[in-house]
Length: 174
Image (cartoon, rainbow, N blue to C red; front, side, top):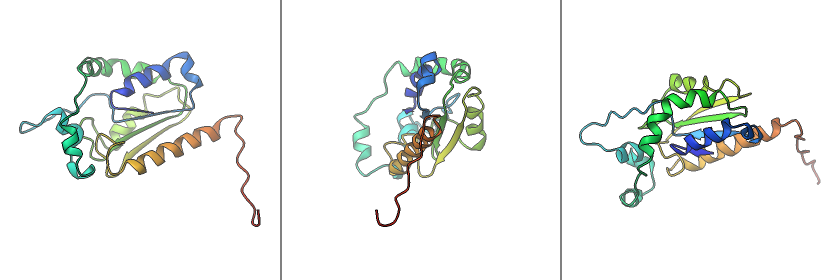
């Protein structure tokens, strides 16, 4: 499970030969190229942490203390060319999610389908748009819904393993 620029490392790891041993890959808050049409003096932090109503009260104060690592600019510049080749080598199920209020990457059905089409060796690719989600899906008010869907995807991946045995449902009186 990886988010934003952490997806660069996660996709690289999953593309390696040993990556075939992963249960699956969840990536969120990443795309092929950023949509950084920041208007009216807006900053990258604004794109990442807005709209404010998607985050818990007090989050804005904490955000003033957070920073973006300098190396991320280098990573994102090389990502556009590296991503398609790496994605084509991923051989495990993939789930790709964006918040419906994503402010950094292209959104919508065509953007989701574009990313899904890169994972040509994956046995299954699932895309999702998280309702009520901004860029930081794990930090917003919809975080629980997002994480429950990630856990459901992991369960589906586990059940798809050749050695998986479905749990026996409890019978009344047990």
